[in-house]
Each structure stands twice: as C-alpha cells, then as structure tokens.
Length: 408
Ligand SMILES: Cc1cc2nc3c(=O)[nH]c(=O)nc-3n(C[C@H](O)[C@H](O)[C@H](O)COP(=O)(O)OP(=O)(O)OC[C@H]3O[C@@H](n4cnc5c(N)ncnc54)[C@H](O)[C@@H]3O)c2cc1C
Image 1: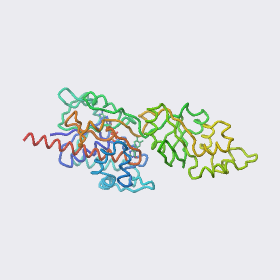
Image 2 (image 1 turned 90 degrees about the horizontal axis):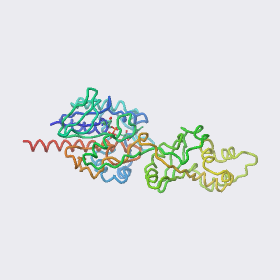
Image 3 (image 1 turned 120 degrees about the horizontal axis):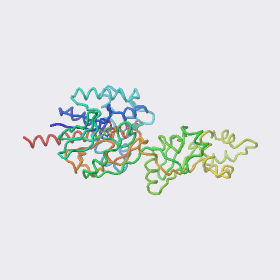
Image 4 (image 1 turned 180 degrees about the vertical axis):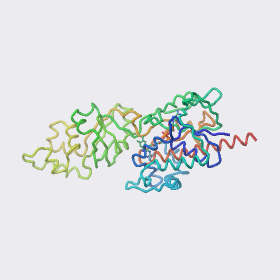
C-alpha cells in the first residue's frame, strides 16, 4: 500500500518522517522545484523553532483552537522539537525572550540534514508536481512539466500550507478543491500581518520614516497590552509588536471597519513624570529640542506626535503628555494575506477527526498551516506544524494498517 504526502513544508516532511520510520513507502509531491522554501525563509529571521515557556502558557497561544492543538502538542511539544533538532545534529539555545533557535540561526543546515535522513528512510520526492484535485476514480491529479499525471495512494496527507508568500509555493489554491468535496474551510485570512493606517501617512512621514522602527514602546488594543517594537511602513505599521496584536486588530476591522490602538511612546516613564517634563519651562527652545532633552523623545516618535495630534494639542502640556503615553492610531485594513507571516482560517477542525483525517474523505489527512488554527510568532507556528504533521502521519499509518488487516 502506498502513501502520498502533498506539500514538502515542515508539516508534510514530519508526516513523511513518522511514516517512513515505520517502514511505510512514502511519496512526497510538491509544486515547487525544491522542498521547504518557506521554512528556509523563516531561517532568514533566525528560525524561531519553538518557545521555552511552560506548557500551559505555550498552549494558550493558540487561542480558540488550543483544545485541539494541545492534543497534538502533548505528543510532540516544544521540548520534543528541540530533541528532534538535536537528533538531526542541530543544537538549539533559548534566547533572552525565551524563544528557541538553532545555534547557527539558520534553517538550511537543519533542512539539509532532515531531507538526507528522509531519503535514507526511503522517502521518494517528486518536485514540480502540483496537486490539482482528484480524478473521478479517486486518483491524485498532479500537474508536472511533462503534463498531468495521476497518482494513486491508499492514504494521503495534505500539508499544503496557507496563502502567504505564494511565490514560495503555498497559495491557498487548494481551498476550492476541498470545498468541492464537501470539506468545510474557513476563509483564509492574514495572521501576523501589518496594517494600513486610516487615510495613510502624510507624504512627509512616509518618505522620511517608512522602514524605521518604533523601539521600546507598548501597544494597547482592548485587553492586549505589550512592550516591544514595530516598524512604520509606507502606508501603516508592521513588525513583531503589531503582529502580536494582529488577530485582535484584524477581527475588529472585519467587525467594525476599523480598529484603534494606543501606543505608549515612553512605557518606562509614568504619565506624571512625562507631564512634569513636558510642562517644564522651555524658554526659547523649540518643542523638538525640549522633548529631546527632557524626555529623549525624537525621530520617528516625535514625528508620530506631529502626524496624529492637532497643532494646539502639541502645545498643551496636559494633552501632549497624555498622547505621549497613549498615541491613538486607527487602522482600517490588514495588509493582504500574501504579505503576512502566516494564515488564519483553513480546514475547520470539526471537519477532521482526532487523527486529522477528513470526515468527508476517509484516507485523506490534513496538517500544518492549512488547518484552521492560528498563533503569534514566537516558534508557535512551526511547533504546531510539526506536531500536526506527526499526528496526521501516524493517523495515515494506522489507517493503512487497518486497511491491510481488512484485506487479509
Ligand atoms: C517571513 C516568514 C518568517 C517566518 N518565521 C517563522 C519562525 O521563525 N518561526 C515559526 O514558527 N514560523 C515562522 N514562519 C511560519 C512558518 O514558516 C510556517 O508556519 C510553516 O512553514 C508552515 O508549514 P506548512 O508545512 O504547513 O506549510 P508550508 O511551509 O507553506 O509548506 C507547504 C508546501 O506545500 C506546497 N504546496 C502548496 N500547494 C500545493 C499544491 N497545490 N500542489 C503541490 N504542492 C503544493 C508548497 O510548495 C509548500 O512547499 C515564518 C513565515 C514567514 C513567511
């Protein structure tokens, strides 16, 4: 009996690993010329593999889907990810933020070692094979440079990714293919994404400050409050702190058309302190040099105050101090999913059994980002992709074994 895995990202490769380790013949198909392209891109940012926080905190990052994700992680959690990397000769370390990275801060050595091990376990790779749905007889339609081919497999793991960075292979084109077969799919949405500010920045602000960071600030959006940094873009904001708030902002925009958050430009100083310094007599000095010398406020932070506040507020110490501690910013659109770090939505968890097999398509399993869960950055994405790949791979193995027993 044969197994096909479609999608050679971390989720699909992990499914291939557990199946081939058990002696199962596995064929991996992918539309791209080589495996793991998004995984390699993640390596450019240091490859944050997982996080070292305690299990309950870790699981809480998956929000509404934490119940299902916790089951995957109980079998293959953050510590297992580190041991798995170590097994491939890649030592990891815990960074100051608790995030876990490979010592070399790269994905390529890990991916190379992993593919080598998989080939050694007999996994057959078929690149430039793009899945285009099923034939009437249930064969897998694969578009290749040599034309369409049909493959048959008794068990199939789909690990087709989300819809961000489509040039790396994952474009969400699988959504109608599954929907036509009766699978419930939640709309794919940007996650860990940037936003456009209402009305755009002024020409002055975007030409001078796009690409520059807001460092050591805090964002408050409803119940969300966190310290960190983010970056101004030509039309809005992006970067780690904005990504962390992105699910809240995105959902608010979908509900009300816009979302508002506040930026504390000086989270280390109290409002009273800021007011005292702002109100300090400044003589003939300009407001800019006053704020710089009394509070160290300059550059993009000062420019944001000019961008957002009416002129009279800039010269009213009380209003200015309030704004420094909570500059309001309104965003009206999430950036397109193709630009996002990850994708929310996907195959609904109710469409899958606990082995991640589609209830509507027995023998077909799903794993990774194409399943409907989301998480912030911090290693939570890769960990859940790997863990779900393992669940789906083991589920497919069990399915094949029960078929074999029936055939005897
Ligand atoms: C810039 C960036 C940085 C990131 N950094 C991190 C990080 O540090 N830590 C972290 O945890 N996560 C990070 N991520 C997210 C992480 O890379 C993804 O969550 C993860 O790669 C998803 O794994 P996957 O196997 O589900 O899908 P993918 O990695 O997207 O793989 C899916 C595969 O399926 C193939 N495919 C798709 N459709 C078809 C089709 N129809 N036919 C055949 N093949 C198809 C694709 O070519 C691809 O190879 C980052 C993402 C980005 C964009």
